[in-house]
Image (cartoon, rainbow, N blue to C red; front, side, top):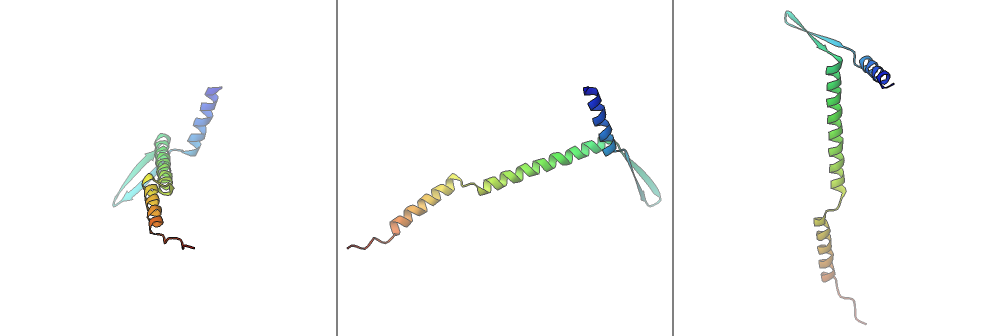
Length: 93
């Protein structure tokens, strides 16, 4: 049962990433490069890991930017304290 699943997975990956040949002509010579299924899978995995890492880092930065730190809380408390000190006294009746 598991062997059939692995065979189907392998076939679908080979269909998605077939062996590709790239030919580059420069000057008078021609070079050929072969990108096998495994090389393409490694490249796709690297891109996926990089995208995941950038997404996690971006989310962490946004959460950190939106969160109020303890220093910010102290500044807010200090500002409120001084505003109360400088507030005009209520009128006497």
